[in-house]
Length: 138
Figure (spheres, helix red, strand yellow):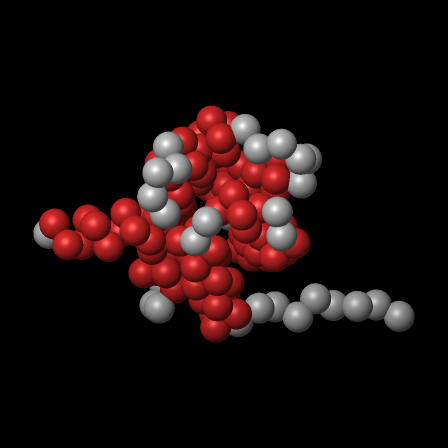
């Protein structure tokens, strides 16, 4: 008996991207204490592996490091901030590989990662508050 993994369709990938962006827009350190973040990161790792693109390898490595760190107890804000920042930059670069409705979601996720990286390194406001403050100024 063999099991074949059903390929995910674009809608599932888009839902994962939206869900991850939402998690990053909240209190990430609070989320880290819940199983939901671990599951979100694991789904994202699996989605990237499904794409099977060597250009995305660093994203997978950084996500696995982030997942392991969050699962390890004490949070090192500097390390998490560095990982999130690199994930944000590489996610924005990876948007070139996305198509259709997935592309803007990948770009939004990259922006959310960069905002989360800044917030983790100096948590005075939530990324959501930072976003609304920057929108109010523009």
